[in-house]
Length: 314
Image (cartoon, rainbow, N blue to C red; front, top):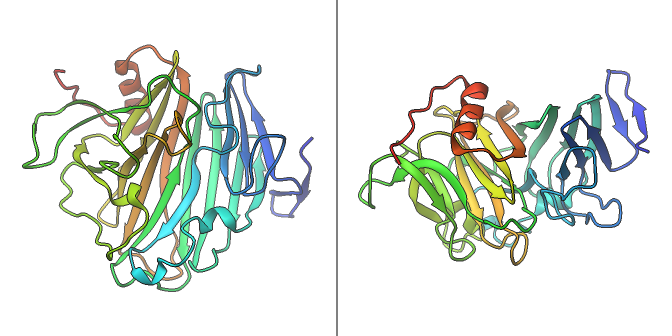
């Protein structure tokens, strides 16, 4: 039983560290950074359980960890290299129930990063909508001019550890024709990050930067902001709102982020043109359902985004 305390503003602050949301199609558990139950470890937030239906089906995410987990905040500045890169996972969060299907995780800041974070999870049929809100409270990012925010999803032993997206090779690095790209890095941190097509910017970092999934650039770039990965007969789809000149979103992945056989299907957001005490945000939709075809994945994105996808010939 999850217990909540009314705040007086239509929301309820949880006295526990997890909130369960069930529908006819899925079972979701949103957790803060505290341990709960017999498997979920402390130090992981976001969607701790995602199961199809209401039965005891396989958890999409590694049971000890989570998905859509706020993993890193960074600047690329060497002054931060002695800090723990997992600060967002180590600092307590406040779990707030906004409605039957909506939960928000709130973190005022981390030990060194003055970034107020709000993670709004809204469950809709077979989808989870995540809206991230960030407010820089002081400027520790000015050296390179961007705020880096990284989210990780640790996938529970899929038979196929690759992700797939519509993209092309970067200019001068191969085939420039749009095509379906299926990619799995050989090792953690190598060819891990895929930028949007048309970008001519790779985030600057000082020598010794530790978060290789954010800067281990691949030879590919994506044409549409969605990707999918398969687990057995099911598919996990990540769809992203297109960003403007103030921000850039990149796909990221690791073959072993969640341990041997457990890939990480991630993403990273770089916020430029930020202002102190001014909130910024971005939106993500994640869907987990039976896999039918890549075409159906495309239609999911088209319906959510309102954008027409020009399918590649192969």
